[in-house]
Image 1 (cartoon, rainbow, N blue to C red):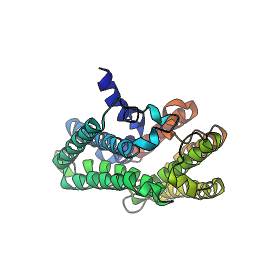
Image 2 (image 1 turned 30 degrees about the vertical axis):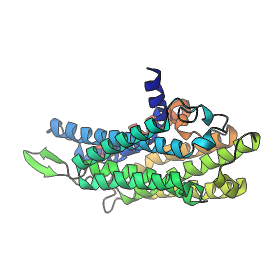
Image 3 (image 1 turned 135 degrees about the horizontal axis):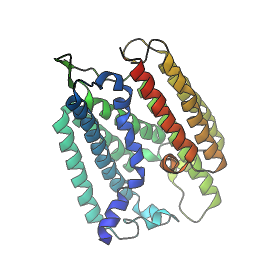
Image 4 (image 1 turned 90 degrees about the vertical axis):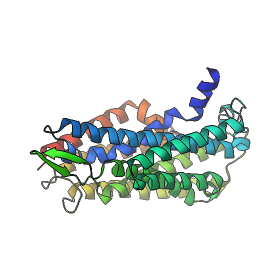
Length: 318
């Protein structure tokens, strides 16, 4: 039982929230796929999206195993990471490799069942993170871009899973185009880049407060002023791009023509500002996933954004 618990801990269950990005396409196309005439078709689409979420959880768990294996010597000298199961010896290197292989094979197999496009997206996620763990995490700027790319791929996986689904409307079977707006990919990339930058800032602040462990190579190439500068740029760009998305009723943006989606802008603005506040005031950027489940204002803001966004999309449904 203890071994099983350590296996779960190494899979980072606390970071599952990152994979919820897979559900973004499902949310932003709710006005297309939701149909009271075909509940079974609606359930099928939701299940496809949940399967994609499961695949993302499995492949990201495999990446965490790979990352802990490559960082094992460094983690042993870290005041917190030294307690990780692989670093402290609770899980052997051989067992960790075996589990990682099982997770990879399972996720790729499930991806292939959905489509070869999903298989390609999952494999791309794996390759990017494999190179990140082995080398790219030591390259300044490239490291945070890799993290951002991983988030964007999650959103792509969610879109691939439900795209071209079949649903019955007025007794006719219709193939749905559930590809989300390119604007949302841009916002996802910028938003995740903001989180990655914040994570580096928090790591550097913690490094200043504790000198009893080896410094990560890439941190020596950053500085707080530089981090703060690019954080200002990226956070501003994130809000601007989301704002432009809400006003873009052309192409496949899938927002109402009356620009009512602009009502959700304050929620996004508050979320960004709240994150920056927590980053500067409480230095919580090193574990952004905890903010989503522990910061009450952030939780309430997300719930209100979901309610407002889904209502606007459904009311504006053609």
